[in-house]
Amino acid sequence: MYLLAISRVPAANAGVTAPFQFVFTKSTTQEPVNINKFSEFQRQLVDILPVDLTLLIILILLIVGSLGYVVYRRYKKMRARTQIWLEISNGDRALMWPVMELSFLPNHYRIEAEQKQTSVILQEGFLSAAFVL
Image 1 (cartoon, rainbow, N blue to C red):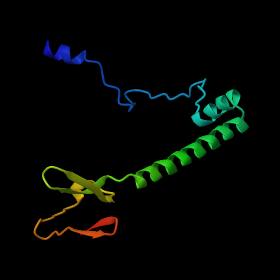
Image 2: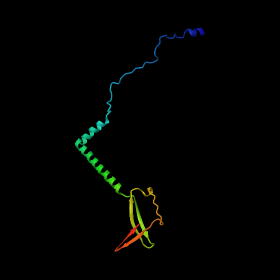
Image 3: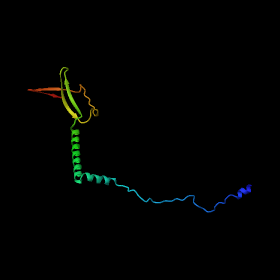
Image 4: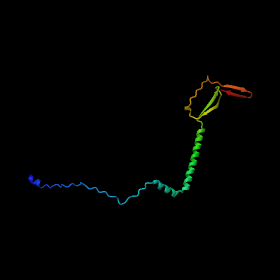
């Protein structure tokens, strides 16, 4: 029986063939690809606003921006951030005078004043008086 079973096995094909076939075909329709998005934006902008008006608006914005920057720099340069005042008091009455204005914040400076090293002299004249430090 074993011999009978072996004799019924189909014979193998000796030809070499690929196990599958790879087929590559190009698509028949291609979708248009819009690579340049800026040209589409530019076309829509020209449809809404003419080129001359767009350039005029840009020029006005540049001029306003430049003037704003100049005013900001001038304001920042003129503004004093720290003021030093001299105060002289006798306990009942106090007098204050501005001494100087500094452009940086107070924590950028170190000011030391001692009463022993500071002298204030009142110079009296005919119908006038002045403090001398």
